[in-house]
Amino acid sequence: MGEEGETLVVKQAAGQQSETEEVKFGTSRADRATSFNLADFPVLTGEEEDWRFTPLHRLAGLHLPDGDDALLTGVEPKVSVTEHEGVTIETVGRDDTRLGSFMVPDDRTSAAAWASFTEATVITVADNLEIDSPITVSVEGNSTDPAAQHIYVAVGANAHVNLVINQTGKATVSQNIEFAVGEGANVNVTSIQAWDDETVHVGSQQASLGKDSTFKHVVITYGGSLVRLTPITRFAGEGATTNMYGLYFADAGQHLEHRIFIDHSTNNCTSDALYKGALQGKGARTVWVGDVLIRGNTSGTDSYEKNENLLLSEGAQADSIPNLEIETGIIDSGGHASSVGRFDEQQLFYLMARGIPEPLARKLIVRGFLNEIIQKIGIEEVETAVTEVMEDEIADLEL
Image (cartoon, rainbow, N blue to C red; front, side):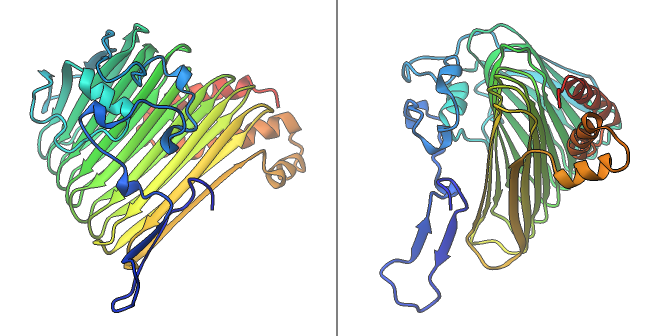
């Protein structure tokens, strides 16, 4: 068991004699501090478990290293949203009661963003609305001064929508995004980090799922100097389903970090998580930490998480840590897996044995590896655009 490996919770059987009621090995994800108050999160040292993989010197001040009296005062990236009937877009002050109604910061950068933003973009989708074309949220940066940003998305009951968040340009931003998903709603979110090379982006994307709702969250990250995202799903009603998928491609010198959290606190909920990453070049670094918590007051949970990483060159490094914490024995299923490695030699042999030259065979394997996630996006024009980007990445590979 590693430092941040699987966390097990062992509870005493009824009537069993013990000096303690509960023995925990490791640190429970449920015990992590949450607060709107920045002072509740000490200044980071890099020794914290949640931050030991992140190069703090590359955060460009987004963690407010000078103390709790500082704020992120830079110009936030510009937000524009495509117009659709039944969808309203507002700019509101930080005193709007919808903001933070279920999301609470759980690390210092998220708390810094909460303390610093002055206005937020609120997108509201009406009940029972079905839209074929995606709602596109364009987030365009034009400044590298440390800034904060807040976006709130509310999807009404029984609505069916596709939402694409396309993040481009140059920025240094700490960002909080909330997704409030109504009962019976079906929401498909694709968040694309296509930033310019100098961008530093730290973000928390938190979702609250109503009864019998379905929420798919797909992360595509290939731009930026340092990107650290924390996608979180919490179940607010029974019978909800979340699918959390991700694809990242790190080039030389990039640091791409994804930390998901799925909180099973309600009965009969289902989650599936699959993230894939490819890395090439000296200093390419990725981190994936998957936390799934199945609480003791739940039953009927079905959960699985998996992360796979493909190292395409020397000098690249991937860390993959799946954490599964189960506080009850009444679950349908639960599991996790991860891998970091070079090419599958059997796949390579199979292709070469059929007359395909080795360099082309290697690129075919990379293409197939990445395409599994691209096909899960479910929005044709977005799948096409992401495929083109990945084809460009593959074309430049020296394999």
